[in-house]
Length: 186
Image 1: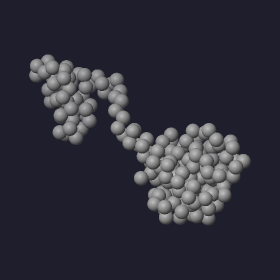
Image 2: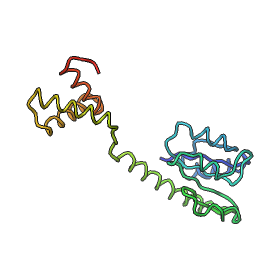
Image 3: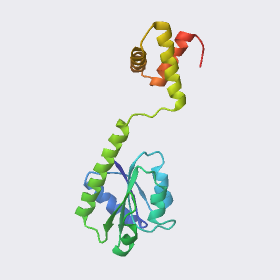
Image 4: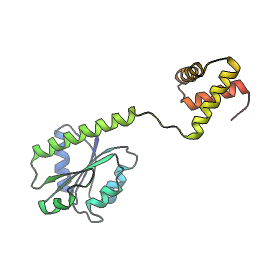
């Protein structure tokens, strides 16, 4: 479930929103009354949603959005005039005050669902290896081909199997193979 940070300059407002969200089944990670507290709350998190007001003692909502990791979304709760400038900012969904509990919950549910889809997509995306890592794998395959008379496909499958059997990455498996066949440390 996507974690939520609730941030409003007045603690009472943050607590009211937090209570609404918790009653609706959302996971609220923390409350904040300043932009700095929001930034501190996002440390160590890979993704989430910030539900916040327009203006804080130390920064505006757009400064917070700019400093958030790209995998975070923001629900901006503000008056109509303030929301006009927020329209079209990537990753910001606007909810006009005065808020209706049902609107906040429905909007947040849609945002959380979209965040979960993005998270699954990121996890299922193939890992991009660096040139150095590709070279290590290629060298291990070459050694397997030369010393064990394997085809390239067989060498690749052997590295994959070694990786799965040992719980190591493909690159680590390639290093293991190179170490065991060459007798030298990398």
